[in-house]
Image (cartoon, rainbow, N blue to C red; front, side):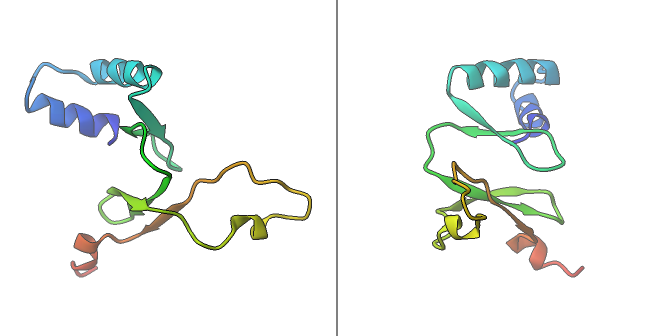
Length: 106
């Protein structure tokens, strides 16, 4: 979730919660290891619970939603590297239209 999505959801239960409080809380929960930041190109960090298995994300270009994808590609990524390079990790972001937005005419 984005900080703004979290603030909007929190206001339903505690109307006085401000965005600054959300940012402070996110920083603290990240420092304590409860949350991890997910960096997506062109937008502020989103946050999810720490401790999940390795996974990737799908971003809907229509509604802006971000969805978790289970697992990882089966093709060895090392095959994409130039000779002599060593892979230390990877992040994959797929994008397109989610199921709900695909059902709507463009």
